[in-house]
Length: 171
Image (cartoon, rainbow, N blue to C red; front, side, top):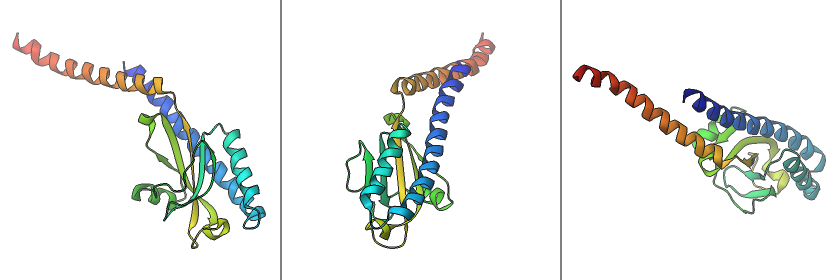
C-alpha cells in the first residue's frame, strides 16, 4: 500500500513540477514577446500566447491584472472576462518570483500562476503592477480517484495495525 501511495503522489508531483516549469518558460517567452509586440500589436501577442498554450499541451492560459482579476489575453478553453485575484499565499509566492501551483487536483486540474515582466498598461490594463499568467491542464481523474482510495486504504491499514497491539494485549 505504501508503494501505491508513493506512486500516485509522484504522479501528482510530476504534474505540479511540469506546470511550474511550463509557467516559468511561458512567462519568460511572453515577457520577451511583449517587448516586441506591445502595446501596438496585441493581436500578435495573443497569437504568441495561443501558440505556447498549444505547444505545451495546456488547455488554458490567461494573462490578467492581479489586483482586479480582469483578463487581458487568453487562449485555450477559458472564456472569462475576469478571474479571482490570487490568494494571499499565492500572491506571496508570486512576489518572490516563483510559480504558485494552485490547488485543483480534486477537480482534475493542475494550474500555475506566475508574474510576467509586463506592466498592465502594455495590454490596456491599469497601473504599473505586473500582469499575471495563469496556465492549466487536466490531470487524469482516474489517477486522482485511485490516489484518494489508496490513501484511505493506507490510513485504515495503519489504524488497524496500531490497534492490533491493543487487541493482542486484551486477549
